[in-house]
Length: 142
Image (cartoon, rainbow, N blue to C red; front, side, top):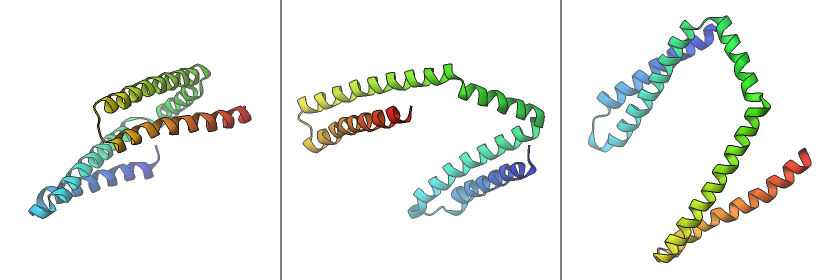
């Protein structure tokens, strides 16, 4: 593991802790409540990521990290896993289209604001355009 990354993770943890402290104890006025909450939330998240990666970088040996990276690259580029991801994406798309169809019909029957119905229905149009454009793109590429 490069020393630069270890220092980066430590720096992230320090910045996160400072942001958390500032949000909790410095920005205490009522009109700064939203900013205080933002500082606390982001600070906690950055602190946890920094500390976790810092400890991970200290524990994992360089050879183990290289072996893990090599295995991960093989898994990501494996043809079987690529096909599985493609099938999952297609099935998710199909379910989302059915869900949007039900939402548009329900909103229409409940006589909800026509603008909301048009906004949700426009997602169908975007999906149709994407299907045409991406089909043409990938048919030329392959």
